[in-house]
Image (tube, rainbow, N blue to C red; front, side):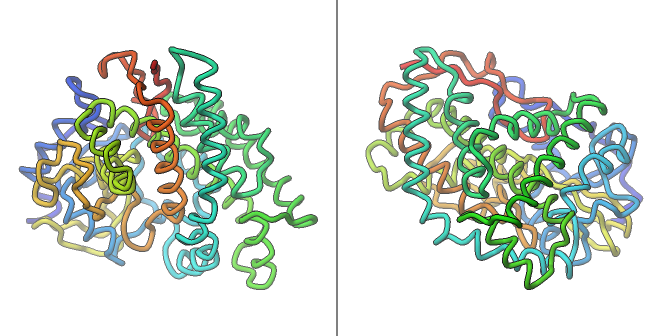
Length: 407
């Protein structure tokens, strides 16, 4: 099938399932079953390929003929003004996530020693301390209380700030600017101001670490880079912004959503309570079920054929990972939460060369937060029905602004 023959277009973005916001848009699920590679129109009127099948997403993420480089002329952006999006975000994403090999391979290799499973596990005791302190704060403030504020967002921010050597008193500043940048309704002026403030802050922080390195991951990255020269000074600043933004936003959302998921499916929570060793599998299943990043963007460098459709060189591609995570050809009863599923082939952290570098740390933080929450607050419950909760519908990431809980 030629890449120019499709004439049916889905709109984008689509709202999440109105009956149950825990599920992706129904129209995307229908597309996955009928045409897993189909055309959509972005708000800028740019036509791109929407990929909703699990196998098709995996294939594209592994294909070296597909580019993650935002600077390519036809790279797709789900915004009314793609050039404005590029100008605002490319300054720091170009440090790692929106470039191709060989630069990407070289930079990722320079960072990997700080993001191993062993490194993440070594931080577990300290993460437990941070989580317990925030649960204490939650208990002191309620019931009812906002779990997203007291635990989810604060824990993730404090952990990544400490890991990278950012002063903990600055975590609120970082979190606020990051939320502004990721909010789809943010004006161009607000977006630009938040970006500039973050870049200036981390420029000063990088300079301080170059003069006086500490015992933290970013200090070690800077010291190692003095010998390799993989990152220039501007790229080091960009990298710091990228790691901090990616590290606390997605992890924080998963703590909130994971709590909602387990409380919404009490039979699954009961299994975890009975066998705490299920927590790692439960986290993998929650990552699959929610897929907070929703989608990822690519552009074809050469003609490729996926799902029987020919995608031409220069065509934009939107991989809707949240819909792929519900593919019944890969996951039995995919709309059900099953903590015993044992499936680790989800795409919540991406796949291939650009798979999330911080996934090991994220897993440990989510595991500790959920385990301690349900251990310390056995009567934890939601204060609102799902349809009344403040889910993020105006952000580039799925998550929650607030999560009212009681006990």
